[in-house]
Amino acid sequence: MLFNKKLNLLNYNERNLFSVDSNGEFDPSESEEFLIFDGYKIHLKKKPKSQNLRICIGLPSKKKWQKSVIKIEVSHPPKAKPEVIMDFCQKHKEWIAKTCARYEAQIAKTDEILHSHGGKILLFGEWIEEQSLALIAQEFLAQMHKSDFASNPTLNLTPSPATKPPKLKTTKQMLSFILLCHIKERTQALARQMQLEYSKVAVRETFTRFGSCTQNRLSFSLLLICASKPQIEYVIIHELAHIVHKNHSHRFWNLVEKHCKEWRALRKSLQDEYSLFRLVLENL
Image 1: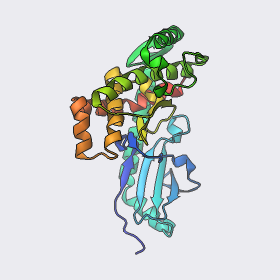
Image 2: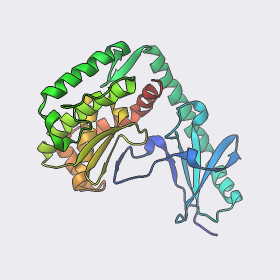
Image 3: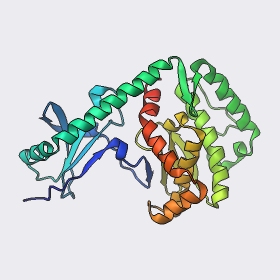
Image 4: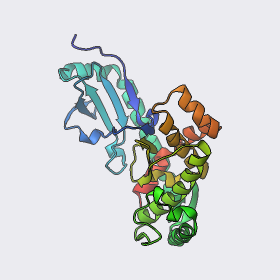
């Protein structure tokens, strides 16, 4: 046998939505080869150094979330034969069907929540009227000019708000600005509390991670604009802790718990609400 067909199943809800020095993203849409199995389109991805087969089920990072774009990807060694891959899928047919059904139910549920809050946006864990967002953004802009961190060059806000106010024309621009203001202020305070130094803070429109830390540069997903402030606090502490520990060792979690006692509950709630956060942003 060319490789060990070790069971290695993964779905998005079980993925690590927090990363450290990671450039990897789960994007099944990048797969060019595929096969049809039991009515499902299975994307194939060759892994040169892999000795195992692995099934990933989730949502592509670069497409709108709809039932039709739930993706199934099988990563495999380069010499794996199609019949071996089909056999692997057949052995886990029940798991594939169950996981896809769970995604469809999850999408339907979050879609129902979204429709019940028509004309509203989820901001820091609370539903607000979309028409009030511009006023809130202006309030954040005013607060930013008055705060100490507005003129602190180490915070790397470009362009500098002291010289050129950011252009806030679209809803996502306003949401990004509001989240960036909040996260920069809290990151500065929490870094002092944890006695850590970081080089930069950024907010990006990514759907694969809530946060990441790369060479002490902290990046946060726009998804967090929907999260409650305690949830955001946890993500900031999580990423700051990666400045010290570039892994998820016991020492890392001990440091997180020292500054966030409720991290387990907050982490779980973020993972549970990920689908809603993503759907909110994709429908803007």
